[in-house]
Length: 277
Image (cartoon, rainbow, N blue to C red; front, side):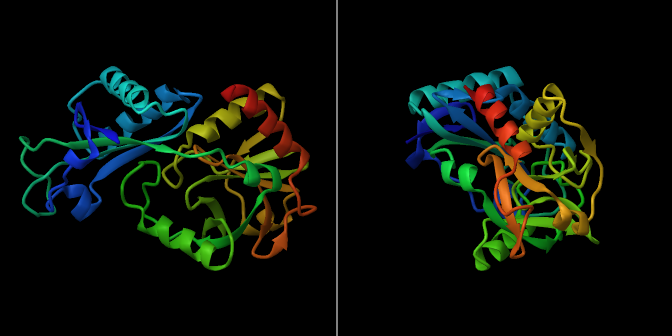
């Protein structure tokens, strides 16, 4: 496999990370996952813009522009002939002697990207998934797509341990998002989702769905909702780059609505399908 290392395409065997890489030791870095449909990166501009914004938020100076980065990613996808799958992109603050404070200004970021073949989640899209609720124990800057994912990893594993596919997180009974997704509640024909602040990731697919809902004249409420309202919802669905628009049919073993994907979710799925087509 060919990967992107800094600004060069090299064999994966040539990619070596030093033990004092700050991403490895501190989670001091950022990342993006970009979906590829029929050889084309979907929503590339928003993903790269968010990557640049995340870098700015953690005071990480990247060595090239967003336009140069997009060109490099295009070369990577083309070289690996990826048709259906994902591009993973990551930048750490670089390699330096271990100390909590930022290293010297001469330290160069370590940047890597690679491609992964992955089919679309057709089964989950059609039938829906099961979820649990879990306490949101993550840090308070979830809007930064950082490498600090241990809280999300633990929540996802809690879901897997209970035979489910996602954990819907809450802080003091207020729903935030999923362990790796954004969460939407449907009640009386309206959408409810957490406002895009520091407590959630501003998901690219989330933004696409909000735009679609506007085009379909589906009312949207970006406001904090309770776990109680989650259990009373007519429909619940999650969104992400890899999960697209996926229905949630049960939560903590209790059916959502009629226990099957609902009509609003289906309308949004159909419109999203046209978008990626």
